[in-house]
Length: 201
Ligand code: TYD
Image (cartoon, rainbow, N blue to C red; front, side, top):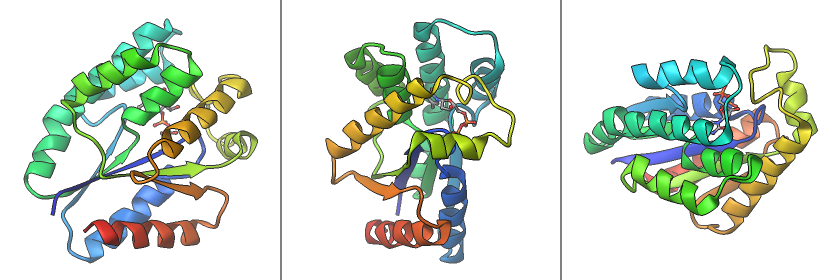
């Protein structure tokens, strides 16, 4: 049965670990599952990823449009065909990342972002969005071991705005979001996510 599950959260929130864990559980049940990450997943998306993460600084509006371009390509080329074949897609970031980072974080017009999100996705929405929420300092400390990109190295205040943005988005749609405390042990988070996902399948 086709199902579209999205993981969201700030930098260092532990999404990737949970995405991998859910993939394993689904595969064990014989489910056809595909993982995507944004930006990326297509040739255009991969090229834009390099520009967005490590290229020279750009204006917020340029940044917004490049994320949307990467998304439009990914939805059209990869996500929609896989869902049409009845698979489960697990996305590491989707439209809410743009609302949180470019809307709440950079302060761009949220109506404009809603509009661009709709155009880029052709109206595709997640069946479930999982939010891993944790204090910004804790999350960024997890990242401090790796090499920081343009986003990780942004001021703490930027990350605080993103966290507030995610909370606002999730609490406006409690049916569609599963909000979890990202400080819980990964195994416990994995179990909670699995319990919820099973109700969808
Ligand atoms: P990535 O290394 O994939 O970070 P993470 O592992 O935290 O997902 O880098 C993607 C970065 O791009 C991340 O800092 C969030 C940011 N981003 C936006 O600002 N807007 C967007 O629409 C998306 C998809 C990502």
